[in-house]
Image (cartoon, rainbow, N blue to C red; front, side, top):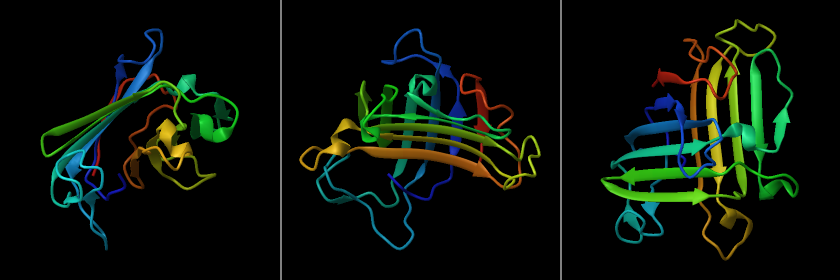
Length: 184
């Protein structure tokens, strides 16, 4: 679901189908499905009829995961932290995740215990005034289902990205810190 949207992002401690001992984060986004030079259709009929239009419909998506359960971590720098894993990397595991998407009142949800990819990163260069890089703050969560490795199985790929080039909003690079952020 790659759409240009008005974002409302919530990062908080939460528990779901993710292991109970995990410190998870939840990232939520909501808005209206819009298009830049293309049309969007419901190819699988998840939210209505197969091939039905999605443009202009209201939606919300929530991804819950624990980035610390991903196998790989890029070295922590002054203003960047990333955790990732999954079958796409041929070694290492991706953190389990839950995703719930609601389009025009119709809900689709999925849980993956062994995803094809799970990637989380935080950038707080703007918040800490890290002038050694591009001044920006970002929260990013990308998940891809196990079916993304096979041409015969449906693939769910979803990501949520919130960023700012002017207003600091990522005070720390700790994935387990609960924060509430609203950005457009």
